[in-house]
Amino acid sequence: MTALLASVRSDDEAFDAARAGAELIDLKEPNAGALGGLSIGDITHIARQLRARYPVKPISATIGDVPADAFDEIAARVIEVSDAGIDYVKVGVARGPAARRCLEQLATLPATVVPVLLCDGGMDDELVSHTASLGFAGVMFDTAGKDGNTLFDHVDVESLARWLRLTRARGAMGGIAGALGWAQLEQIRALAPDVAGFRTALCADGRRSRLDPQRVAQWASALHRPGGDVGAGVGAGAHGGANAARL
Image (cartoon, rainbow, N blue to C red):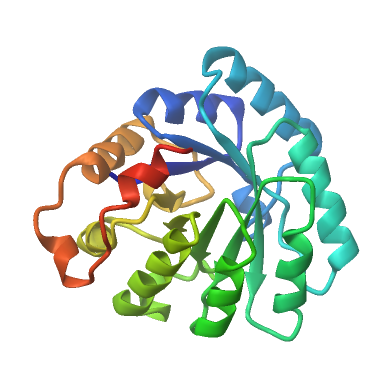
């Protein structure tokens, strides 16, 4: 089973998403970029409110859109977000000369970091392999651009399937996101990632509008419903349910 990650910006949205069936609540600010970060005060408040009602519901949060070569700033933000009561700290990393060093530094921090590999224009097999070797709890594949193109416009299904297998072989959960919608449902089912993340598809009028709990419930149902034989074509394996259960 693929777990539903719902990106939210407030405690009201967090409660709606949790009640509607999202397994993982992800805190971010859509108005501040692809991985825009909320203030530490807001993260702390939402996490505290959500824990009071859903004590075992895992919570992730982004640190914001920070260049991969801003190592000190990234490290400081990761620690701040982690200390705000967050289970998983998401950090976007794009291809480039600073990516490898950034990932190596993230792996040394006293926080549960989930690198988000930004696949705009593609992604390097070697960088994915190196990321998987560093012992992270999980790896997400996403896009930075929110221009209507989806993750599948930048990376083919076969490559994503290979990277998810590699991530799982290292004992980590593997997830996908990136402007995913109903047109990509069969591809998502074929890959059977541990986690599929959404914002735009869960909102009434674009990613900056309010989250709609009915849409969350529809996506939770779609992801949890068996996808027949579609997964066989890319050899996604049967690890999705086991890894998602660790969330």
